[in-house]
Image (cartoon, rainbow, N blue to C red):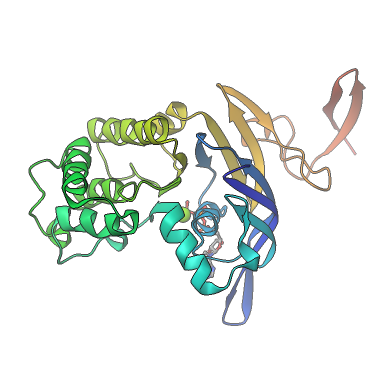
Length: 274
Ligand SMILES: Nc1ncnc2c1ncn2[C@@H]1O[C@H](COP(=O)(O)OP(=O)(O)OP(=O)(O)O)[C@@H](O)[C@H]1O
Ligand SMILES: [Mg+2]
């Protein structure tokens, strides 16, 4: 059973009188223990997909299974319960993950409640998580008075605190220097290997994407490409559509016409002058 299965997911935001289609026909399956980097330009729909995987949003159309449970069939209370037990999420804005008047250690303790750990082992785990993100001496400081980078690191210590099946993080290294960034990457990888946790991380940071087992690139609300073990592939979509990656736009610009050439194991596209 897959940890995540998206089947033709569409997400539409209704803003005043306009509608924004943030995701269109997303098909994606993620297996237990995979670590996935979600890539793509600004506005592509990365955060929207992460919110869906966290159970914070319901798809406008299509079906989403989390751990084999069809999210569309759950009422709000059941969805809230699934979310609390299932996932640890770090939102794009670090401060929004934290309770500002609580100390760093209290923020982690708060997140651990759902896991029902014994108090002593919970405190040990909290200290360990703080050390892992380089905040060993900051346990007593109120989260609200930390710098942006410190808040980001603390948020990343909070997200795995309830030992989730699914760790979701939105741009976890955007405000970090290289050393802190490396720490955060190691933490994500260790949580995945040690705890059997699946991780999905939105990132623009190549150090992050190179460290994870798979990349999924979203462009214009669709899954356009995937990468595994350093090799990149384009994804043939539901209607047979293929997105030409930007690095080939000089050869085959958007809006141009191409000739299809049949090969033994596929096709080649060659630019044609109309
Ligand atoms: N609450 C909302 N209401 C209306 N439109 C929204 C809302 N949230 C996102 N959008 C729109 O949906 C699209 C996808 O947004 P999303 O935040 O998922 O992109 P993203 O890939 O995370 O971008 P970034 O890299 O800038 O964070 C964008 O066009 C955005 O303007
Ligand atoms: Mg985003």
